[in-house]
Amino acid sequence: MIICFYQIGIYVTQSIERHCIPKFPPPSQDSLLVFLLCLTLAFSINFFSSDDRNSGGSSVTGSPLSSENMAEPPPLKPILQKPPGFKDPNHIALPVPRPPARKLILPSPLSQKNKKRRSCWRRCCCFFCLLVLILIVAILAVGGVLYLWFEPKLPVVHLQSFRISKFNVTDKSDGSYLNAKTIGRIEIKNPNSKLSLNYGDIEVQIAAGEGTRTELGSMIVPSFIQSEENTTSLKIETMVSNETVDDGAGRNLNSGNRTGELVVNVEARTKIGFVVDGRRMPPVKIEVSCGSVSLKRLDRGNVPKCSIHLRRWFL
Image (cartoon, rainbow, N blue to C red; front, side, top):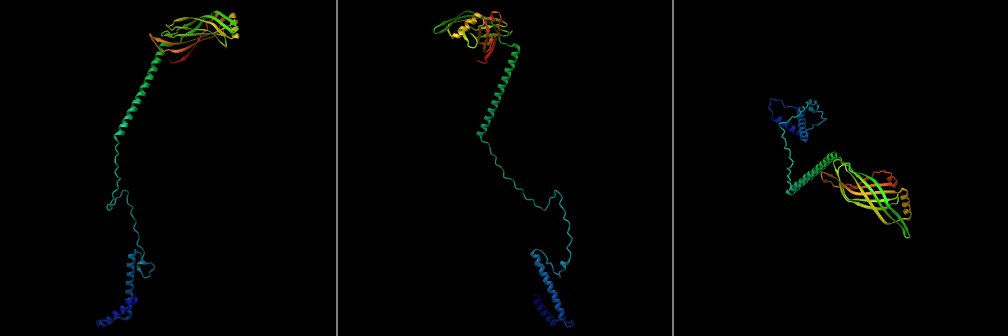
C-alpha cells in the first residue's frame, strides 16, 4: 500500500511541476516524499481504528505512534445507587401473568342429601344419649332421696326353738332306715319403721349332722306381708319316713340325739320385697342359713342369729 501511495505521490508532483504557476517555486522531491509518508501513516491509523470500532471498540495496544494510547484514561464517575422504592419512569413494567381461574365444583344433590341425613342422625344420637344420661341421673337422684328417707333394711331372723319329737333308726338286712319328725320355730323381725316387707313362698329344709348331712325333711311356708316394726314367728314341722342312711351315720344320729350333741342345720329360701304405701316393689331372692347349732344349746334357751345372703339382685 505504501508503494502505491509513493507512486501516486510521484505522479502528483510531476503534474504539479508541469502545471504550477511560475511565481511559486516547485517543491523538492524529498519534501514531497515526507509529505506522502505522513499522509500514508495518517490514513492507515484512521483505517485500523475504524476496524477496531466495528469489531468491538477495542484499541490497538503497543503502538508507539498513537497519541491516544499514550494518554491516561479519564477518571470514572461514581455510580449513584438508587434509593429503595425507586421506579424508573422510562421502564415499562411487564404485566404479571395471572394463574388460570379454577372451576368451581358444585356438590351433587345426592351428596347434599347424604350430608343432611348424617347430620340429622348425629343430632338424634346425641339427643338420645343426653336423654338417657339425664334419666339415669334422675333415677339415681330419686333413689338416693328415697333411700335416705325410708332407710330400707333387711329382716332379722333367729332360730327360736328346735325339737326332734320322733327319731328312730332301724337296722335291716338291706340297710339302715330313718324315721324322724321335727318341730321348730323361726322368728322374723321387720326393723323398718316406714316400709312393709313382702315375703314369697318360703322353702325350709332341715338337716342333721356335721360333714355328711342327713336330710330331716322340708316344708313350704305360704307367702305373707309383714307390717312395719312387726315380729313374726313361723312354725316349721318336717317329717321323714324310711329314709335310707348309712350304718355309721345312723349310729351317730342315735347317740347324738340321746346326748344332745346332735348338730342341726336350718336353711330357707324365699323372695322378699318392700311395700311403700301399698305398692309392692320388685322382689329379690334371699337365702337364710341357721347352721351348726346343737340340740343342747337350743334347750338352754340360746337363740342363734341366722345369716341372710342375697342370691340375685334382679329376677
